[in-house]
Length: 365
Image (cartoon, rainbow, N blue to C red; front, side, top):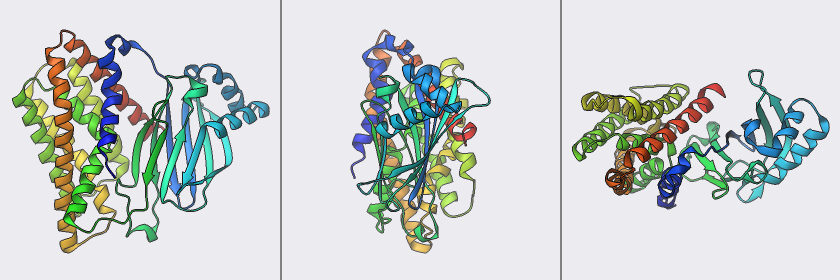
């Protein structure tokens, strides 16, 4: 599958609205945090909403969460109409719907759906058109994962067992192929590495924040080299079993790295050496996340060495492609009269995304 459109889509989501209309930086969009966990032929969907941000739909959602049966039926029908999950082209059915009011905030509601699917995926497609009832600027940030059983150890998706997608009016579908057999050649693992980084929005946004903070070509090259060296080192260590860190720590740490670098772009004084050391440290964390795509294959010997070499080369090629695509935008920002304001707006947007991911990976799990 060609992942270049995915990368362009991710970059457009980040850069498009701000570059096309800088005043739009002040516009507030409403965001829902969604988690989809697939286990065999069942899926659990969890969506956390702030009801003050979803317009006319807020009242029935709040009443349903408070126990109003009529409102619960109304919200259930709304969810049936605007959320759909399919496995290998066959629809899953919602077998249970629940709404929970947050004990910490009267404005926060969590929607819980249990799905029954015809079979285990396969190709899983989540369709979300909640921007219709919740407002045109609504978007869902969805983390989709599969809980693999022992029988799945020899098989893996080309994109790994977890992906994150932004679903909005222009991009209402997320598609993951959990059923592809793992590659067996050096070229196959090279492609796997490219696909892994080009489909990883969190890694791309971290890289974008780093590049936005680079003050010169020399600084940019040192930053990219530090990130490359660090994630190559930790990727190898984790894949070979020399370092084992739980994903429960790695995923929130990646969100923290995005927030930290973006805020540093806004507030920290220029200190190139400290920036490069920080890049190296966070690169180690990102490498641990990259390693998940290989460790789940349970390889050994020459197949493991071949997989590690090809995958790492693919990650580096994908990263180089991302840098080449972003570099003209950075050059345009540097020359534009409003460049500093645009760079600040982009860094603020990246920090906001990092905060949402941190909430999703820590507070909501």
